[in-house]
Amino acid sequence: MSTLVSLENVSKRYDRRDGTSVAAVDDVSLEVREGEVLAVIGYSGAGKSTLVRLVNALERPTSGTVRVGGQDLTALSERELRQARSRIGMIFQQFNLFRSRTVAGNVAYPLRVAGVAKAQREARTAELLDFVGLLDRAHAHPEQLSGGQKQRVGIARALATNPPLLLADEATSALDPDTTAEVLSLLRRVNTELGVTIVVITHEMDAVRLVADRVAVMEAGRVVEVGDVYDVFSDPQTPAAQRFVRSATHDRPSAGTLARLRTHHPGRLVSVRITDEPKIQQLIDAAFRDTGTSAELVYGGVSEIRERRTGSLTYELGGTGVDAALAALRSAGVHAEEEV
Amino acid sequence: MGEDGFFDGFLGTTDVFLTAIWQTLFMALVSIVAAGLIGLALGIALYATRPGNLFGNRLVFGVLGFVVNLVRPIPFIIFLAAIGPLQRAVVGSTIGTNAVTFAISLAAAFAVSRIVEQSLVGVDPGVVEAARAVGASRTAILFTVVVPEGLGPLVLGYTFIFVGIVDMSAQAGLVGGGGLGDYAITYGSQRYDWGIVYVSVAAIVVIVQVGQLIGNRIARGVLRR
Image (cartoon, rainbow over the protein chains, first blue to last red):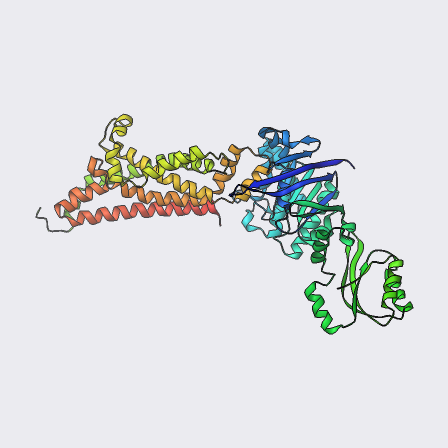
């Protein structure tokens, strides 16, 4: 796969009143491959929104280079930048639809800006509204639509000029779970049916699980971990990624949950990582059985990321063979960690 | 005078009354259009040059803001006297309906500019960002996104200004501008003819109400919510 977007040592610093400056994005190098869906995840204030705005040059980097389709955006004039932006779609958390225009008017706006003739504009608008399932609402005004419908209009507008790249800034964060799923599956279709590369900025687990191929974890302006979404979520390497994954997946007990569990379960608490290794349950059972260890399931969760099993189960273990059981699990390649 | 009926004075001067209505309407309508256009341009300039906005320019914004703030607090009656030389240069006279209309247009334009600026500042920065993201130029964003998005409150603001303009037009009598205010004072209160005063008041109330009604209708159409 070739690279569509590449950030090289990109920083964005803002000046503070006291003369110091703060880095919203700090020396980030990151590649987005053509045809993939990359999720950039992290807590609020990690610099995700600034990062995505550097990709379509809504923000100019303080240092470093941003390349999109081989073109160095940092070297472009304002006029050339506007053309580059028309080849990058963007959708927003608050949809940012034009209230003074109809649904069709919103979708046609980027085409007007690009100087497309009226007949072609209308044909393209109808085609896009059909794609997002809102052809019958073409003459409605944005305030007459539900949140999910508004975001579908936002997606149609972002795709009007046929951009090869779509940026989604917390696109589902203002929506309820059902609507979120509907918008995410539309984004998936945009990727698979139209071949559009997508960068999704999100702090929501569902957005990652349902659409992303790869994931980049951000903390304090830095990208601390990048990888296949399954790898990062099933086996996060950095402390920042581990913290985020834990809070997003809820399958490992938090400190508070752990303290509560201990009041009912005085035995040793061990969390076992569930992967898509075939027969992992049988491996775990065998380790406990062979060492005469009693096991009680007290916490955990198993779900799917990109159709692969992942999760964590926490057991209360009893008997004299617990250490032997842990050794047996590890030698069988099963990750087991005692909660302390 | 010696008339018996309350409205006899009015009935005897209906030709003056009709001329006064025409003068008031002329002053108010020409002024709202002229002030509307000048104020719109000035207000857009204030919005656009605000530091951090599309054409952010601290100097231009500062100078415009200073001029607007300088003129706005001047009471109209003093403003009318103060711009005499300008009136003579533009309209050719400092008295009469045209001279007053010019003065009202100018005074109201400064008020309109602040209302336009406020309406535009209220436009969601998110839609401006959305327009930037599709590659729209700054000029295009200003006129195809910011102004249409801010239009609803703008129309209500204009309606508000219209009332102020009718108020200003009542002071036209001082410099021979005529109008209902002049009629009410010279034919009414100065002759203790309360019938004429109340008819004038009623006529002004009707004009203002109709203006308000039209403004609300248009605003509802534009706001569509």
